Figure (tube, rainbow, N blue to C red):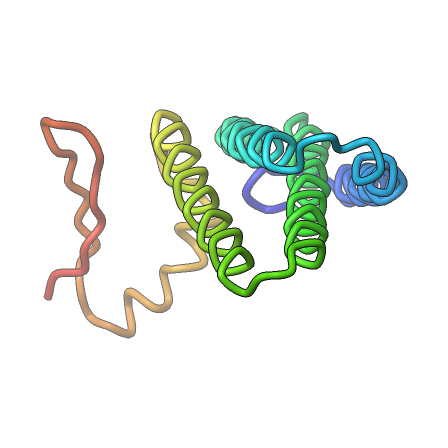
Length: 168
């Protein structure tokens, strides 16, 4: 609400959208599991789509406008539903495989895909870097900075990226 400068109504609509998307995701989960001919392919597609959705949510959040609250909440709701689907697919695969070695391979593959997906979403989200700090964020940190008796320094690097540091 504060970062995207939204009203109470914007947050209320976002909560409704989040709830509806979660309900649809939960309702579709049994259908996905029943129709899954290849759990691995569906899992991989779900995780890749999840990474894209997280990047899209980051772009919405970067808009810093009240109109971005509902799309941001919808994207995060889709992310939550996709995470549920991938977790359920992993559980189904692990429970249907009898050997402990295979269950370990599935768990390891799941972790690798999650880490790679997170890395990709971070890379895509870094494209939407912060151009300036919102006044609400600056106000929230002002008292802490004054208590630390330091100066907040912002540096941009030629190869890209930026860094905030507190110097005394």
